Image 1: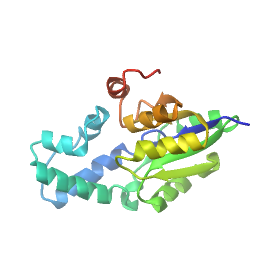
Image 2: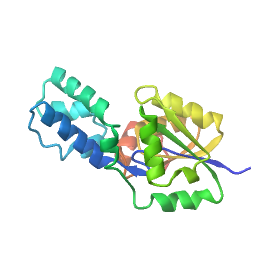
Image 3: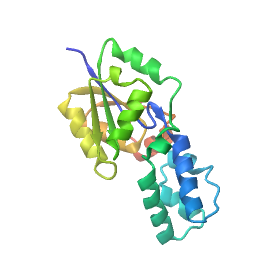
Length: 196
């Protein structure tokens, strides 16, 4: 039986950094707020949320929360999903495992059709035995850990604290994709027992 390897999607295989910036820019423009969002993704890489970023830019808390809710409503809109691209090494990484391992994809998304659109656009479905969608938010780590355990996954590639926590709960080896939404230092700072 082949080992099962799990991949997160956004920030691991898919580069969605531009989408995050454009959605925030559009939300701010709709609300007549002029703000430079060039540092948004870099702030996220250090563990800050959209709300933290907005607060650091002088936005009042209640407005920051409202803007975040608008951002959540828009982030998986097909118009914005079309901005995403694969990381340069994504196909090579999948090919490295495809011939010898069973691959599954686990992603936290609200819009299943948007995910399927992207998997088809980038011709990725052929690589994955199964695709699992969990709810984004506070339960994502627990839901991902259940998928990892249920599939006897031996290794997971991910890019966030949430991915790492899921792997830890399921007792699965974890590989940090350092170009994603949390940098290595953020995960190392949060979880000092990580082995990379």
